[in-house]
Image (tube, rainbow, N blue to C red):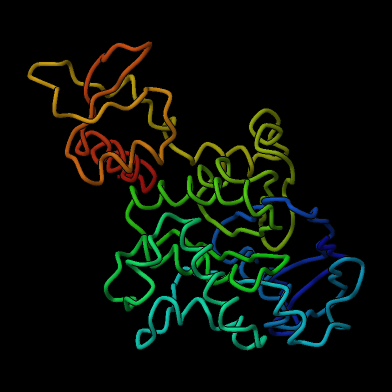
Length: 314
């Protein structure tokens, strides 16, 4: 699908931000680029859709050099989601989503149906939200709109540049689950940039770990965890901090009436747990048809705060 052939980029003609990159991203793959600041992650994304030119080498999409595509045709094939959501504040949610389909001169009925379909995909009721302005939505809801706006004209490729890094921890975990669920439905080729190794391991079919513009290791999460290729990769994996949140380790005993609490299975996905805790301070956790304890919003926030402190060395 996307082939990099000896791709390099230098902004000053001397230092290479991306250095002799050779790799291929398969159709329908969730491909994650990760590495420290300045390693070339965002530069790679911008080269794919020709926001910046290559210094050396070639990028091909479906065997054709990106330089051979008319620029509007190339960019219509590629959706882009940024950390800065960049919704137009004066436009409604429906108008924001409709921008590219309107540029492609879709019929109004087709655009409206597409907006409805996409909003339903990410759990936002079209009748409730299509007429609202971005300022009337939460940060997580705005980022959902940013994602589906990139999908509006049904592009082949989605580029995502740290799209969840500015969100609070609970919204971020929820959107990661939403994106994984969405990808099972849409099966797009996604190139996702992050600096968070846990996020990379959770989302990526394959992960490309970069250092100084070069590939340190490229493989599945399992391959990278089991066999780090270099000391840098091992150190990067270790920077993930403690193990992911384990419900069983954070349950509180049942000390009062739980008849009013929502019951969630201990095997539920993060998205279901977080949805339940959006509207309630505490939920009951069930295992093998028996409630074994309760879990509170505070339990999760305390865990995430401790995790964040460990990552920055506090």
